[in-house]
Length: 353
Ligand SMILES: [Zn+2]
Image 1 (cartoon, rainbow, N blue to C red):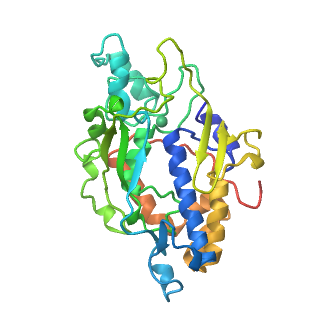
Image 2 (cartoon, protein in one colour):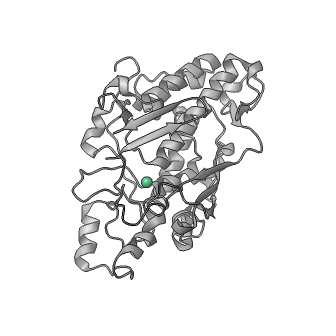
């Protein structure tokens, strides 16, 4: 399983990843890399010429604690994301429909309508594919336990509004510098109507275009362009012999310029799931630990206060993240309705594991 079932989320205590889809892991790894670069800039400023991150203003400028994040992504840097498959959820619904014996989208029956709306607002995985442009939960086998992790299409759509920065990284780095410029997928995976509906300004995100909530803190609605490549990943289903029957792999590799980890079930390979010693470098706990270190080096009272917790829930509800929270709420209410929270893993602290 690549996502924690809903009833296991409370066991994670920041140690276990909720969602191990590749798109999610790479975004978490990128946030880790950026935060590590912030630490490098603070610890050894003269040796950090090759960082993606740079100071936004001179270090220790008086009054800097109220001027927003002290770092930015280097001017002129473009963030380009490659995925060897169309992101699961809305951007891949046409591909799923084409695989059916009859490729005509299903007409929804009255029974389906009442069942899907009674079930809960976020549709489950690949089901109800007559409905397009909606928030979906992660696809899984029908007999798999329920998960509340949203599809990669939905999470990537949200990143066009919130930037690639996570809530832990956003106090440090200017969000205006951190939007994905281009998403690249194989030609075979690209359906223009699906991508413009899932991500484009004329698709499901149209209601938030020009919304005033984006006017502050460097946030904007920044739709990326979706480009294609004729190259296929050598281990994709489309590259292997047709008589070979592949099955999904639950092992993931997270590799950055500074480290790599193998993840199984949201935990480091070889460790028990939910064990603190199995916490990935990109887990909530590890990211918060690093962020707290960076905050101490910064001597920025507002960031220090937010990172002090004492619980992860306190951090997420801190005043420093208020603008970001409001923005996410507007996007969920106007454009990505049905975005149900996957909560239950917020009441842990760094002191108690
Ligand atoms: Zn996915």
